[in-house]
Image (tube, rainbow, N blue to C red; front, top):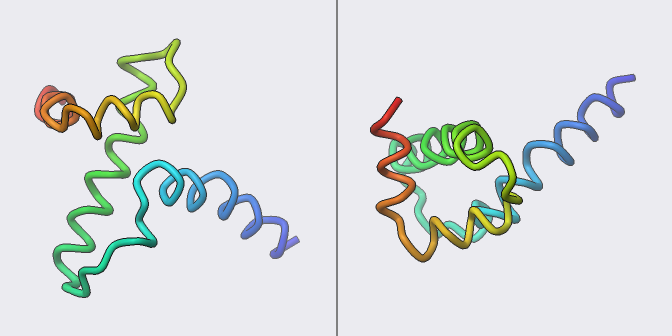
Length: 78
């Protein structure tokens, strides 16, 4: 049961965070910077589907990569 829980967490959460935002490629080792970036990424994972319900997450990640201001506007709007 425990393995099933953590496997689900890995698939649903970590994979999306790493595949979309590249968290595992981060080179920073500053704890506050890592925490702040994780918070921003988590907020975007919630906000993007709310504001763009018919667009896939990979497409939305490309949108944010091409125009970071779009993500910042979403974060500021809430």
